[in-house]
Length: 215
Image (cartoon, rainbow, N blue to C red; front, side, top):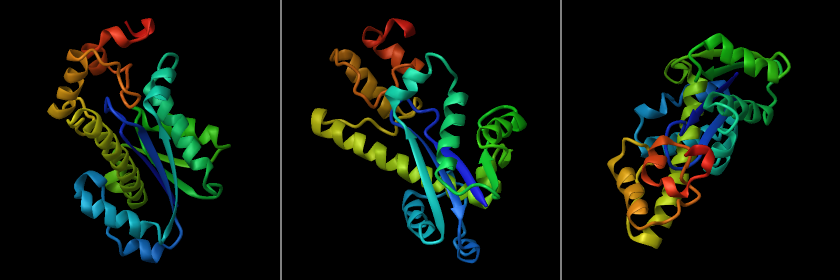
């Protein structure tokens, strides 16, 4: 059984991370008590992440902001996510496995079918809220979230060292992230590579740095 989920679909900063988790030792996995990563503290996610490595095989794919921006010139965010799910699954022995994915599309069947077709007819079960209902997808959500959190921590370390401020969580609703983008605008700084320039939030704060495609 394989679960797949993402972290970082909506933020204006940092990568989109997709994790695919193959359950190798179902008995040990069943004792971990995994749940949707959003319902866990950062410390608990980190502990479960390490424990998952002992009873699962994990594949992680990240899409950096510059690649997200480039792809969005010709395709949707759902297309980007579908492609990344497929790339993560392709790194695991998925044939013959039941694959459960947390659906990003409004139509569950369509998202599952697209992934299945790309994988030669693999058995894909696409569900909304699978990260809260299917344990192997919960496990994938934990892995993806930990990997993204580490990327954001690295970004904040860079920002702190260079400007003495924080970039926050990267989400548009985060006041610290908004303050960072405002700082960039006021100081006429070109967006760092970890900013998704195609995001409306970024465009609002620094139009002058964007390609004509987005203006």
